[in-house]
Image (cartoon, rainbow, N blue to C red; front, side, top):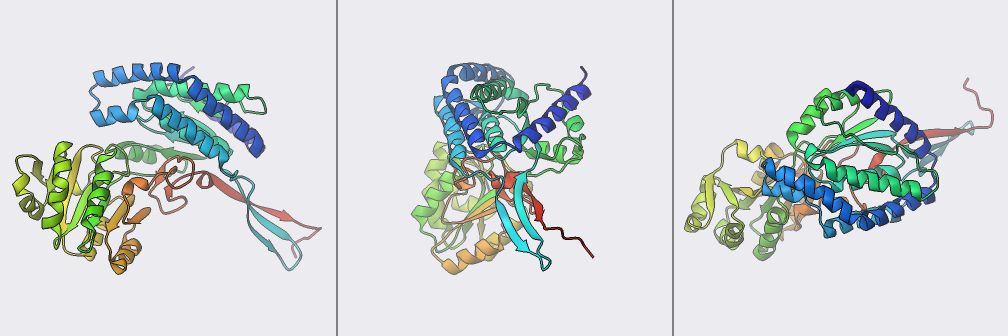
Length: 426
C-alpha cells in the first residue's frame, strides 16, 4: 500500500468513526474515557519503556535539554495525563447543547444545537502528553481524531494511542474502532496527502514550531486553526510591587522555558529598572539564562556582567520564540510603549502587566491584541487545565473561530434544527 492509499484509508476510517461517535451518549463516552485513564496508569511501565527508546534516539540526534524535557515521560507526567482524562470525563458533554432558540411568526421552531466537527487531524511535536489530551478531548466532543506526532516521539505515541484505544474497546459499549488513529508513516508527504482529502477531513490543528505550522497551513486544503508561535511578554510597570513582579517574571521564564506560554521578552519601565533588574539577576544567573538586552538594560545590568550571559538584542530577537533559557530584556517608558512593543513584535499569544495602577492595567488589557492578557499573573496560566477546561488541544492565536486554549466547546460546531407543523414558504 503506497502513501496515498494509506492516508486515504485513515481518512475514510476516520469519517466512518465520526458518524458513529456523533450518536454516542455522554455516559458511553465517559465510560470509555475512565477506562483510558485507568489503562494509562496500569500500563505506565510499558509506556516509559517506549519513551526511553525515544529519549535515547533523541539524545543521539542532539535534541536540546529543553526539548528532551518536553519528550520525557515519568510516573508523575503519566499520572498527570490520566488526571487530565478524568478531568475531561467530569466536564459536561459539549454535544447536543441548545445554544439558541427562536419561534418564527409562522410557528416554526428553530434551535441552534452544538454538534461535533467530524474528523480532526492533530499534528504536533515532541510532547507525548498531547496524544492523550488530543485523543481525549476529541473523543469527548464526538470527533474522530487522526494523530501525527513527531518522529522523535513515535514509540511513546504508539504505546499511548494503543493503550487508550484498547482500553475503550474493552470497556464495552459502542466505541468506534477507528475513533483514535495514529499516523506511523514518517514520510513528510503524508500530511499534504492527508490534508488534500477534503471529503473526509474537516479540520487540522498543528501544534509545534512556527515552521511546522506555516508548512501545514500552506499545504492544507482543509481549514487550519493556527498558533504560529508564542512570543509572550511580561511588562513591569512603574507602579508594580517589585517582589510580586520578580516572582511573576521568573515563573513566566524559568518554570518551563520550552513551552509556548513561557515569557520571551521582559519589558521594564525605565522608572524602576534600576531597582527591579538586580532583583531577578541572581536567579537568572543561577539558571544560566542568556539575556539579550537593549542598551539601557545592558547598562543597568553592567554590575552583573561576570555572572550573567549578556548580549545586545537584535531586531529579530524580539520576534523570536526561543523555547530555551534565552530572554530578551528591554526598558521602555510607560504602558503605551509597552503596548506598542507587544502589538508589533508579539505573536498574539499571552502577555502580562504587573502593576498596582488599575487604570494602566485596564488600558493594557484592552489594547494588547492577544488571545490571553493578564494583570498581576504569569503568562504560564494560558493552558486548558489551568483555565478549568480539563485539558486543551492547543492554543489558537487566530481571531476567527476559537481563540486561546481550545477545550471541549471549541471542538464543536453547530447545526440549526427546525421543528414545524406543516409550514411552507410562500
